[in-house]
Image (tube, rainbow, N blue to C red; front, side, top):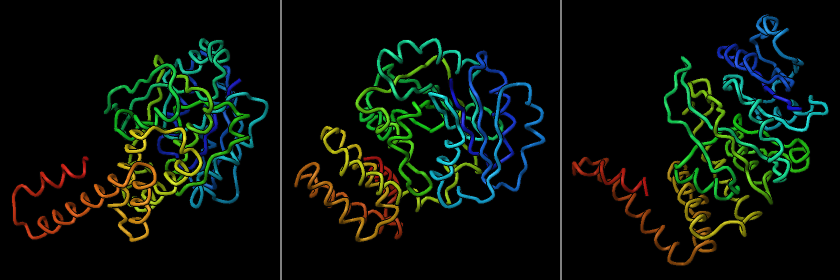
Length: 320
């Protein structure tokens, strides 16, 4: 059976989430709602769904999500019982009505392939529930390092809600506690899926909401997100270095360079330079410094407003 875990805090879009659970064509799941000491009481809303699906509701007297989303996830996971699979569903995300049904239709193949991570296709929605992205689909079988390379090459996207994890693996490996849980889900997908594949079900979808209320849509926390990227890459290169090819490492370092440009401390500069030298080559480290010099020159030109083409050059360098 499946445990759908909702670390609850915000009420605004919660009804749409619950409605999507009510509309599942297969009800072989149980919902666990862990209220992170929210001032917005969901119980009156939950009463409307008391006969729609099985759920347990728990109010936590202290707020954890404000300091550690991962710790909030973990205490919500601890609410579950004997379920074999877990989904950690955002309180503003929505399932297509066939998500659970298609999981069970693919269950035999998932079992035969010894899969620990199952992924559904996704679409991104706004505050009104309107889709504003293409449908993101995936290879049926994909290893974690190929997935990360695709994501950091901007060829796909990913959010925690779209995954089902085998619970015993989650309990063994655990989520890594990164700032704002930024990249904690990416790292979990890699680590939980090892040494096998991620199994994708593309005919069912999660609708991932991006709004000013979501971490993804909140620009005020960008510095913490960028610092989390440094911590994430540190784990990749210290604990999982052998998994990645040099081209994949270059993709990861491109991602890290963007984070560095947003928080350009000397320590972060040394970190990026060292990764280029140790993970790729001396030439890669030199090229990083040359790119950095060009970037600084363009910033100066942009500030002085000397050339009209500065903005085009600025964008070109950022996209490298």
